[in-house]
Image (cartoon, rainbow, N blue to C red; front, side, top):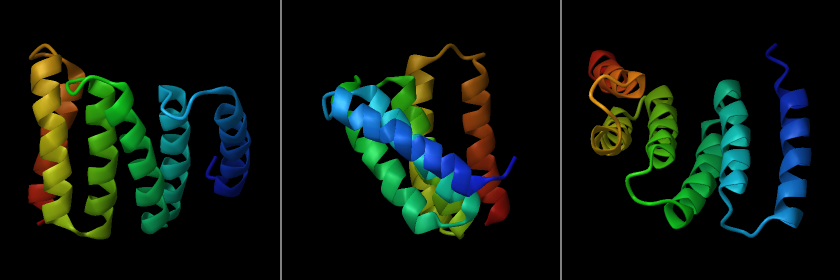
Length: 127
């Protein structure tokens, strides 16, 4: 609906409950940070988006094995912010990290692998 302030309100309420109920490195906290980051990215507030995506990513790094697809998704989200900011070299760096994980973790015909190729192609196109 594009009602970002309302989305933030509810994501923040959810996050407050997660913070009280879960240990600090629980993946649901990472998902919560990710959701908040996504709203900020959609609003064009890239510094806030990066702040929340990076908080999410730090939890995923601690909670998940290094080749977990959720870790790749986290790299993708950070790459997307850099791409939206026009920092194509940073976007490419994070998209390639995501792609390396997807290549190891997913079968060769998995849609996320196709999306990963597309993300890298988009950066080269935007450059």
